[in-house]
Amino acid sequence: MAQFHGMEMPFTKEPHWLFGTMERYLKQILDLPPPGLPQMNLLEMYSLKDEMGSLRRLLESTPSPVVFCHNDIQEEPENADSLMLVDFEYSSYNYRGFDIGNHFCEWVYDYTHEEWPFYKAQPADYPTRGQQLHFIRHYLAEVKKGEVVSQEEQRNLEEDLLVEVNRYALASHFFWGLWSILQASMSTIEFGYLEYAQSRFQFYFQQKGQLTSFHPPS
Image (cartoon, rainbow, N blue to C red; front, top):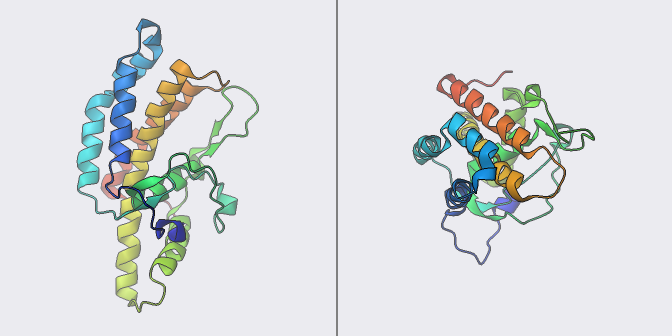
């Protein structure tokens, strides 16, 4: 992932993708005709318009470098030491924290489930502090390759990145929650989009509540 983030691409490097896309999704949902009532109920239940403003303020106070991001890495934890990046539909310049946080969120979801709603969520599979640090240390080793970093500086880099990615994990839940509400109104694929959206927003608020004293389980 660090190598992917180091790529130089001939696109705008302004990080408009994340909130620009979420704002577009939200507007499209609000413009749905009356049959979109279940989707509107989700919006009202979670006060998503106001919550997006709260999320924006949190992330504006969270330093995260803008890099070329995949934005949709789906990888299971047993393969965490080796990532194969495919399907670049959502790739853009974006905040580093989103790409790593999104990767951690995907540990929770199994999309190979063969019965409705055709996914399975296992919150206990969200990476522990130790698993996150394992990933982060390998990531930083690639980013800082050839640099001499003191032990204290290394610890600070690791702790800062832990906070960064877990805050941006909220953006992952929010982004794919909105996406899934919209898909429920237009997709012909057999998948529990509304159930998935509700799952993502439930995890969003659960993880948001844990951020004030952020210490992932060891």
